Amino acid sequence: MTTQAPPAPAPRPPAPAPGLRASRVWAAAFAAATVLGGLFAAQEVSQRVVRDQPAAVLESLARGFLPWYAWALLAPAVVVLCERLPIRAERLWRTLPLHAVAGAAAAAVHAAIVLLPTAWLNGERAVGVPLWVSYQFILVNRAVPPFVNFWFLVAVIHAVLYQRRLRDRELAAARLAGRLSEAELLALKSQLQPHFLFNTLNAVAAYVRDEPEVAEAMLARLSALLRLVLESSGQQEVAFERELEAARHYLAIHEVRFGGRLSVGFDVDPELEGMLVPAMLLQPIVENAVVHGVAAVPGPGRVDVGARRRDGRLFLCVRNHSEGRVLPSRTRGTGLGLANTRARLQQLYGTAQRLELVTGEHGATVELEIPLRPAPAGAPA
Amino acid sequence: MSGPWRAVTVDDEPPALRRLRGLMSANGGIEVVGEFTDPAAAREGIAALQPDVAFLDIQMPGMTGLELLASIKRSEPDLPVIVVTSAIDAQTRQKAMDGGARAFLVKPIRDAELLSHLANILS
Image (cartoon, rainbow over all chains, first blue to last red):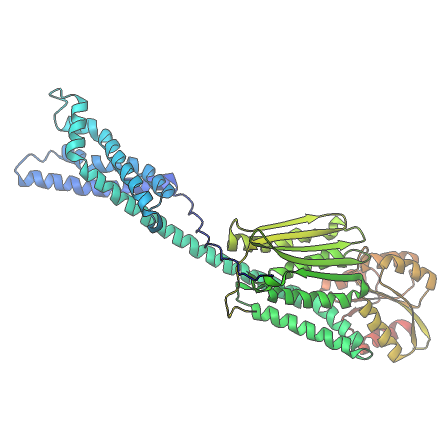
């Protein structure tokens, strides 16, 4: 069998930041337009005073505010453009021309918005200059500043969107860290919970006198399991073999505790053992299989753990089967126990993962798929 | 405590039954006449064997130890029952005592504690 390492999947593009809310865009745009318009109106008045012209405050205000309020009206459309077609280094030659065309269109629309008041202010209406002539004049003589303003607006919107994406990424990272801590805590609780620990120690005590080798093996497995859990602390992803080792110890302890009632099977493609998987991935799934599928059901039960490569991904399957019927009341916690795992997979891999729980009369199957990524040298194994 | 006394033990985990048997044989005076991993079978076994004391685990498949305790108390109201469990919460202990258990033992079982309870119950 060839052991060609699979290519690492392309890094998942960051999830798009949720769109800027229209009402907030309007509010910000009108606030900015008011400030800029005020400055330009003040400049208009100053120029008139310097030239010894009448201040004409109302006209100056109109000339100062008009172009900026027109931009405030256009701002939401430019925001949508920037959200749909963000300018990124890797797609510069595709997005820049599209933005240039959009900028020209925006300048033309801007001219149309300011046309009537400008024609009136310039006195063109008074002398009967047709509107289309005034429009032509604006386009030919005053098209450059709106075009430049468009790029200024695009730059501001990109800065805001970038800042939001950065904040969302930080939030997602913090949430992910929280999920990991939660998963660690749950795993620790499940492995150190009194029920598991005391039953295991009670079983060890049962064998100490007559079959010390069984007691010794159980203690060795218990300590190895606890060590693996403690060493995983703080790791987001670990080599799959580490998760398998913990699951083997956990299930072997249960095999002794349940006598012949529990049997366990592992069918794992050895090539997958070096792949990266989320820390504490297997533990809650295997625990669910034992607690809800075998311990709660009379008669023999079996837990099978299988993993193979499927369509360039890691496919994991944990199945529990009991001869007795699994009562729904005894499996109520199964889905809840997986909620944390599901949320972590979603945060780590986005839509490139799948986790499904199928329950039946005699057992349940958990299937999951995650991207296949080899563990780098030096990863916890 | 004079014997020989006869005990029945019920736990879905065979090592737990083995632990109880070992403790009682080491300390003498009590013979384990029936061991059950299935609570339903235990109910019939207790009726047939008529032991002097019964030990019940709480978390078992099909029927919990508390349900079995209630059932035993209906058919054998005078049989002393000792609940043996790894559940350490006060609520479970209270439920067991309210259900008619004479004693509550926490796993891993300590022999001194077991013998002290047995001495109280069987004397």
